[in-house]
Image (cartoon, rainbow, N blue to C red):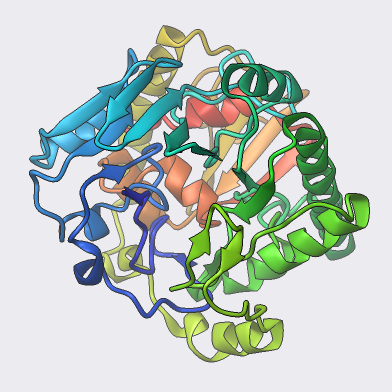
Length: 405
């Protein structure tokens, strides 16, 4: 079973790349019995990678009321979809599989809506059991429930990173403040992973999901991402839990879940080589939208007003209510899009809580036309933000995902 195949560089509107660069291609992996796709983010559901697989390959996903992933798969011609009810254990081939909807709205911040797309999988076979949490990181309470339901896990695959634009894209922070926030977020995540391991107590843990590097114009933001290597994660967890068994894998490595041993010695990531690769190769890459013609700003403003109105209506269906005023800088024109559309020179200046967003008008044009997506642009570090005060409002960023015509 292949899980979340992202095999081609350039997801999240062109900026996310692998390091080390992959040797494998989608064509090398097409002889699989099934594909599990946890959610619709392109580092888990990369349409470019998926097109190499036979459309009759079974695709396993979570059944949910608003199923963006299912709709997209169907639109691409994939109809052999196996839907799993939330929390219900079902058999598939030699496996027993249980999928879970988002365990929490947000692991670290208050949110009324929060996470609406993720899933996780518990998979069992021949007495071996593993948790593939993906980006659906459980809470300590969920870990207690999982252990009560399934007993002892052989392997827990847990995300240790915070992929996204903070703090690298936030100009209200100085470089030194970004560095401090970068380290604070990493330490928070390491502490949280250890808290989960204390409760879940698996035989071993595999730190995974979220190791990536930024290419192109935004490559300078790599320094301040809320991410680090799995090697660094393992080292930090071992300082807190020295008896923990941590499994580390490179491309092509195989882990025996019974003996918890790799089929070859693990080779750590060379961070100096990674920096050289970014500087010499990845910085030179161009994003697809950079090749577009420059859009009409007048038409962009007209369509932005329509898109923002529809965004608010879509958000209301999910019960999203936000506190911040959002201002988008459209080629020097400051335009407020929440709580109401405002193109005046004072737009957003007197708001108690404001988020100012700046991005290439070519990319904004694509977002409004549904050729790109706000959330992908945000996670890909294509949008610069100024936030005052520096308070994260998760539901606001959920709302912005609905900005399009």
